[in-house]
Length: 406
Image (cartoon, rainbow, N blue to C red; front, side, top):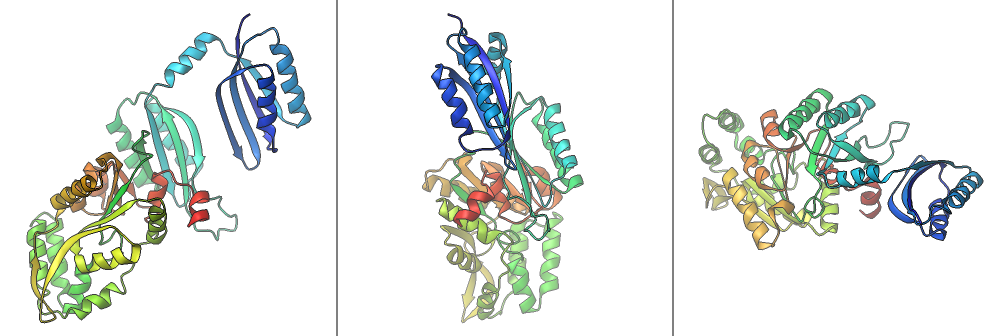
């Protein structure tokens, strides 16, 4: 009694019970399923089944039944025998490294996708599956414009640095975001997300808002720019800027907090993260007062920022405790992960500035959000095309599931 390996491919208009009908026939002849895959695009089914027969004397009858059933259901079917050597080679390829590539933008064109897939092919990576994470776009153009495609790829990556560079070039040239992640257990089990606050969770820099109300906006911005040019370090620039706020009435802080411009997509992101049980933290070089306001608004778990000193209802121009700079952010991320018993590979960090790079670099998923080019170059992942809820696609969430439950 000789066995035989056969691949069947079935396509046509999707109908309920199609998969059941075919597998019932295979079961009748005691066939063993070696691999199976199915997809549906605009009500058109593509079903592939690789199976092994236990007795090829009856395989002809089995294939006839499948052919008749497909004809009855008006489906196209193709049969292909697979020799054992070819099958063993296919099995060996399954042990290759797996990666997830996420392509995100307002609209993704065929040309953009071809460039992404071309880079993957150049690296010797093979695409196993492709799926759309965003909802189907409306033809009238009135929908919330965003598009996301996720590719599952496999193979021996030749040069990760070169691939990252090519993807970075594509993001600049094509105006899309490309995430490249190892497909492992940690990618599917993120548990903690740490955010910068200013220009990440909110659309402004709070110290600039305070400075404008104190009448020292130009001076504060000049110090900020000097720090960005590397002329002074963060701690010194922070101290000098805070000193200029001396005498400002604390009531101004309440007015600013109640009118903070929340970043696009933040509310949708927070709703999904809380629903899924994520721990959420703010690690900010800004101020605790505003961090606590956002913590209450979004039901977050941790806030670490800088505390402004107040006397007689006015700012003294000094701060209390150590400055939360880039190094401190990374330390705090480690601390929270230890307290929550979460591995660093399960942590997401999101920020826009150079002082966020230390925490972005140690997190399992570090995302530069609408960041400057130098920050994006160093960070492993970035989002520049849409709002904060773009993070959900990097985690593999689909609109059909998100919007159903939120």
